[in-house]
Length: 72
Image 1 (tube, rainbow, N blue to C red):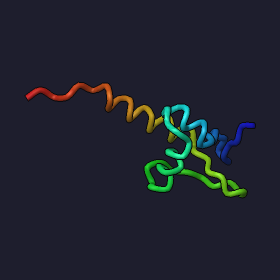
Image 2 (cartoon, one colour):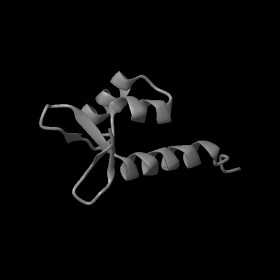
Image 3 (tube, rainbow, N blue to C red):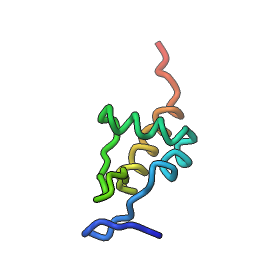
Protein backbone atom coordinates (compact mmCIF):
# COMPACT_ATOMS: atom_id res chain seq x y z
CA UNK A 1 0.00 0.00 0.00
CA UNK A 2 1.39 3.40 -1.00
CA UNK A 3 0.52 6.33 1.25
CA UNK A 4 0.52 9.85 -0.19
CA UNK A 5 0.01 13.34 1.23
CA UNK A 6 -2.65 15.77 0.06
CA UNK A 7 -0.18 17.06 -2.56
CA UNK A 8 0.29 13.47 -3.83
CA UNK A 9 3.77 13.05 -2.41
CA UNK A 10 4.67 9.49 -1.52
CA UNK A 11 5.26 8.79 2.17
CA UNK A 12 7.87 6.23 3.17
CA UNK A 13 7.88 3.95 6.20
CA UNK A 14 10.86 3.86 8.57
CA UNK A 15 11.82 0.53 7.01
CA UNK A 16 11.87 1.98 3.49
CA UNK A 17 13.98 4.94 4.63
CA UNK A 18 16.31 2.58 6.51
CA UNK A 19 16.83 0.51 3.36
CA UNK A 20 17.82 3.62 1.37
CA UNK A 21 20.37 4.68 4.00
CA UNK A 22 21.41 1.11 4.83
CA UNK A 23 20.71 1.55 8.54
CA UNK A 24 18.35 -0.05 11.05
CA UNK A 25 14.75 1.31 11.11
CA UNK A 26 15.27 2.29 14.78
CA UNK A 27 18.09 4.58 13.63
CA UNK A 28 15.64 6.38 11.32
CA UNK A 29 13.22 6.78 14.25
CA UNK A 30 16.03 8.26 16.37
CA UNK A 31 16.90 10.69 13.57
CA UNK A 32 13.27 11.83 13.48
CA UNK A 33 13.14 12.23 17.26
CA UNK A 34 16.34 14.30 17.13
CA UNK A 35 14.99 16.50 14.32
CA UNK A 36 17.53 15.36 11.72
CA UNK A 37 14.71 14.32 9.38
CA UNK A 38 11.10 15.44 9.31
CA UNK A 39 8.29 12.99 9.86
CA UNK A 40 4.52 12.86 9.77
CA UNK A 41 2.42 10.86 12.22
CA UNK A 42 -0.44 8.77 10.88
CA UNK A 43 -3.73 8.69 12.81
CA UNK A 44 -2.49 5.40 14.27
CA UNK A 45 0.70 7.05 15.56
CA UNK A 46 3.13 5.59 13.02
CA UNK A 47 5.87 7.72 11.48
CA UNK A 48 6.01 8.40 7.76
CA UNK A 49 8.62 10.36 5.83
CA UNK A 50 8.21 12.54 2.73
CA UNK A 51 10.02 10.84 -0.14
CA UNK A 52 11.34 14.13 -1.56
CA UNK A 53 12.90 15.12 1.78
CA UNK A 54 14.46 11.68 2.23
CA UNK A 55 15.92 11.67 -1.29
CA UNK A 56 17.32 15.21 -0.83
CA UNK A 57 18.98 14.24 2.45
CA UNK A 58 20.41 11.11 0.86
CA UNK A 59 21.76 13.12 -2.10
CA UNK A 60 23.28 15.74 0.22
CA UNK A 61 24.99 13.11 2.35
CA UNK A 62 26.18 11.18 -0.69
CA UNK A 63 27.68 14.26 -2.35
CA UNK A 64 29.44 15.25 0.90
CA UNK A 65 31.01 11.81 1.10
CA UNK A 66 32.33 11.96 -2.47
CA UNK A 67 33.83 15.48 -2.41
CA UNK A 68 37.61 15.25 -1.97
CA UNK A 69 39.10 17.34 0.83
CA UNK A 70 40.64 20.70 -0.14
CA UNK A 71 44.41 20.74 -0.48
CA UNK A 72 46.48 23.12 1.61
